[in-house]
Image (cartoon, rainbow, N blue to C red; front, side, top):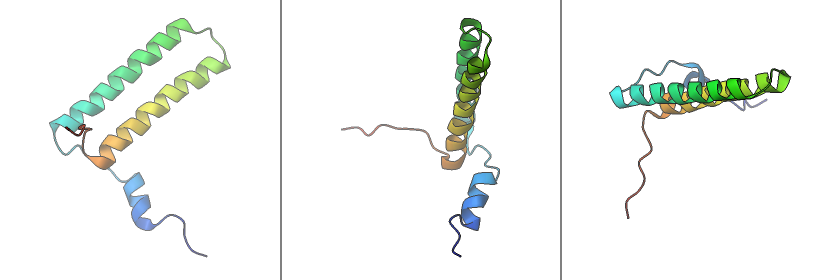
Length: 82
């Protein structure tokens, strides 16, 4: 049976990707800071209930995915001029 996910893809997903330069490291920190800010806002605003837990976990997942994007791509968004 053919594999859907290659060994190279698994290495990419689960390997360590240190920041290639300080701008990437700074971007990781900004993502963490902004997600923490949103999590605090929601934690203060929302009533204690299972849905609040789900909302906070979603913010945490966003942080993970955004930082994975930075780590794997090792570049920042630069809009095309034109």
